[in-house]
Length: 131
Image (cartoon, rainbow, N blue to C red):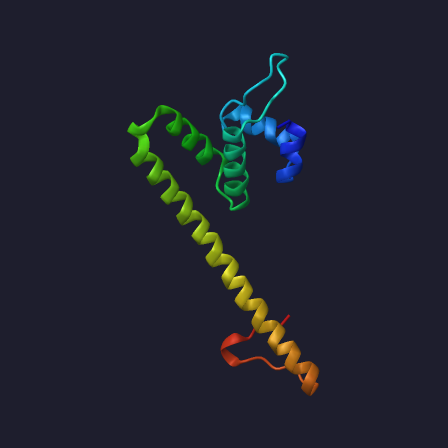
């Protein structure tokens, strides 16, 4: 698969994909005899992992470390697991933050929906979030 095809499939730029390879977020990509990147199924799996993890907010440095550990082999299984557990904890923090935001939005919307019906905007005493 060409770099253009991979970028289209994952909705990322060629610059981003080249950067991921250059810094080690994905391992070095296979190339044709002419030096053109030729993404194999294995390369695609790494790209998919990188795109997924980055969209969840996992830091580039953590992904680089994971790839390095993976390339070192099975002696790093525990370290890789620990790294993934750290990434999961960070993603969970983000999910909790988004859930709190969603709860706030839902509350506000419910108050405005009630105001549309009654003509009066009111707030619960414990949830005074006027704005």
